[in-house]
Image (cartoon, rainbow, N blue to C red; front, side):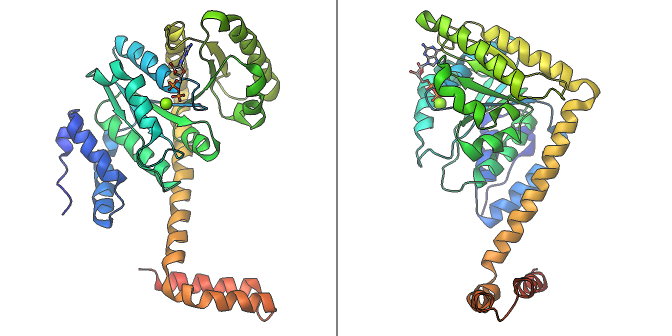
Length: 326
Ligand SMILES: Nc1nc2c(ncn2[C@@H]2O[C@H](COP(=O)(O)OP(=O)(O)O)[C@@H](O)[C@H]2O)c(=O)[nH]1
Ligand SMILES: [Mg+2]
């Protein structure tokens, strides 16, 4: 039997209750899924009050170190911080978990920070699903800023972009390598590029990279939005310019709250998430429908042999699916 969930403990900010709730939403057991769905439904009125920030960048760029410094700074300004990770590349016991533990030592000891490593991998797409629900749980528990860390590769980046209010990309002060990031359409996603490791002999390089990215963003991105993406430099180890990044975030928050801009973005995110969930569910049922599974090879053969049109075969599958669905 799944354990009873204590909503009141969650809403009062109890960390153990929060951790338990996250474990529940990460569970794939049908009974847990049902409980998780009703839990999310119940706490929905207590969600939405945070600023959700995505932090991306290739492994080694300094995301965890940055989050340690940035998170501690935000806490000094009176905020409560939750840190979540989406890392589809990490093996079961995730390299990132080890990294996070050693890089976020101070933050992980703070009573105003909650750090949750990525759920075990092996289910692409599922991970981002859990992260959305986890964000809601952290909001219900009273966290003001949710930092979602992801490695800068493909789908996970786009997934994180589609669940946050502000998306930032960390780069190293080495313009040559990073041209790729710009080409991959990252300009469409970022609200800010942060050039990390701007310390010691890398300071001039970081300045050059900053110019370069500013130009690239200016050239490649049309300014239709209220927010123009900004390029900043910082050093996460020396903790320089971290306060500037925090100021930028608060400026964004103030602007985004005006005229319901943030609300509009979230509404769009929710609607496309709704569509994706429905599509996923239909696909799952299609996969697990035994009748369809049995006849499908023959249908394919008939289509290949030209005995039936694809339209005719598809209609049969769809009819079977929806007649049999509970
Ligand atoms: N010099 C310098 N090194 C940094 C900085 N930020 C992170 N690092 C180092 O870069 C390495 C990777 O950092 P980590 O936070 O684990 O990167 P992640 O894989 O993106 O999470 C570690 O050795 C850090 O100490 C920085 O601002 N300056
Ligand atoms: Mg890391």
